[in-house]
Image (cartoon, rainbow, N blue to C red):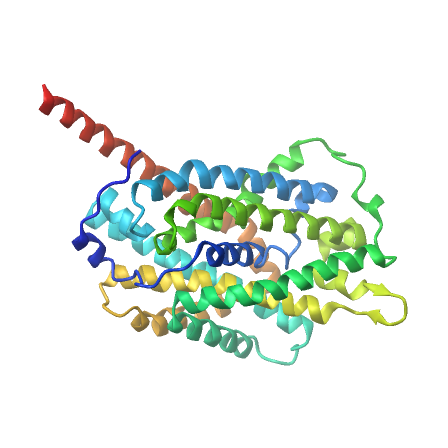
Length: 389
C-alpha cells in the first residue's frame, strides 16, 4: 500500500504533533525502557510456571508479528500523522473523534495503572509509612514536568539513562552467575504440562502486556527523523526488551524457586536481595529498585505524553501543555481510587483490562483501521479504472 498524500492543512489540524524530531536511536531506547517498564517488576507470565521465560519469548514473537503486519501498514500509508489523526481520516469526523476519545482515556488509564504499580513498589520497598497519594503525586509531578519539556527532552533523557539500565542489568545478571544463589534445576522439567499452559499465558495476557502496548508508539512514529527506520527500530526494541524480560524471568525462578517467584509481589527485588559475592558484595536490592523506578518512569511518561498529545488533537487546543494539568489530575485520582488493594489491582489487570480494554484498543481498532484503508484503496483503484475506461 502506497502512502496516502497528506495535505499541509491536514497536518496543521493535528496540533498534538510537535515540530521537533527524535532520532531512531532515541526511539529505540524509549521502546526498550517502555517495554521493560512494569514487566520486570511483577512476576511475568507465571501462569506458565517454570516455562514463564519461554512464554515471554513467544509473546515477543507474536507481538513483533502484530507490529509488522498490523501497525506497520498503518504508518506506511499515513507516515506523517499520528494514530489519532489517522482515526479521523479513516472513520470520518464524528466516529473518528469518538475513537480518539477512547485512546485519550486508554493512554491516561494505563499511565494511572503503571503509576499505581510503582507507587506500591516504593511503599513496599522503603516508604511503608508514607501515604500512597503522596508517593503517586510526587512521581506524577516529575512525569508532568517531563511532558511539559516535550518529547525531545524525554528522548534525550532516555539516551542517558539507558546506559544506567545497561550497567545495572548487565552487572546484575553477571552477579547472579558469580554468586551461589542460582539453581537451574528450578527451571525443570521443561514443558512439564505441555503447550496448553504456555498458549493460555501468551494469548492474550503476555501478548497484550507489554508487547501489544506498542500501539502507543503510533503517536510518535511521525516524529522520527528517518522514517525508513521505523520498522527496524520498533522490531529491534521489542527483540531487546523481550529477551531481557525472558532472562530476568528465568533468573527469578532459578533463584527464588517457582513457588516464591510466582507468589512474590515484586520477585526481582527478592532476587536482588539474595545476591551475594563473597563477604564484600551483597544486598543489591537498592540498585534493582533504582533500575525499576527508571523503567517505570519512562513507561508512565510515554503513556502520559501520548494521552496529552491525543487530548490536544481531540479538543483542538493550540498548545498541548494546556492539557497536562487536567490529564495529570485525572491520572492521579484514577491511580489512587481504581482499586482498594494492590492484589485487586493486579487481578483486574490480568482479567478485565486484558480482555475488555487491551484487546479492543491494541488489536481490534487497528484491524478496523487496516480494513478501512483497504476499502479506501479498493474504491480509489476502482474509480481510477472506471476513469480510464
